[in-house]
Length: 118
Image 1 (tube, rainbow, N blue to C red):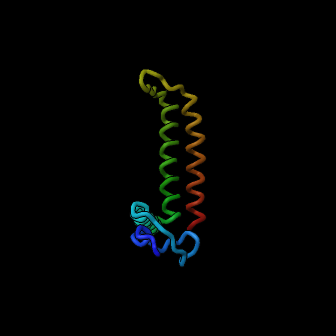
Image 2 (image 1 turned 180 degrees about the horizontal axis):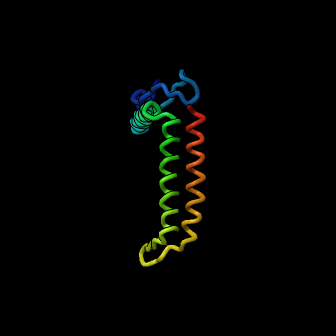
Image 3 (image 1 turned 90 degrees about the vertical axis):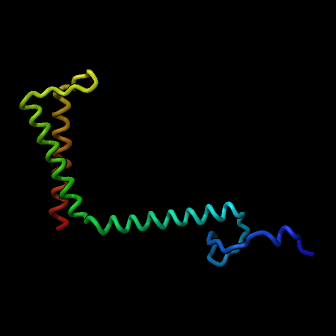
């Protein structure tokens, strides 16, 4: 004789072990699994759209130009002796020297990668 509660259980295919594997999945877990699959599908769709909109060459070129502008502004700060005050704290000039080196390196790397990608 069959258990009446067992007959009411929702049995569905779950691809955990294999596509043909059948297991009991409580209704809440089944809905959660469906929602997670929907979210994963949306994330995959967003990733595919993002790949189509900007190439590696374009991204590297834009990043290289942005970092070049940052490096030039830091050089201007050093040459013009601009003071930067954040919440009452004055940033020392040696911060700008470090920023010039880091931003310059990132700019050089981005522009070089854009040139090689073309």
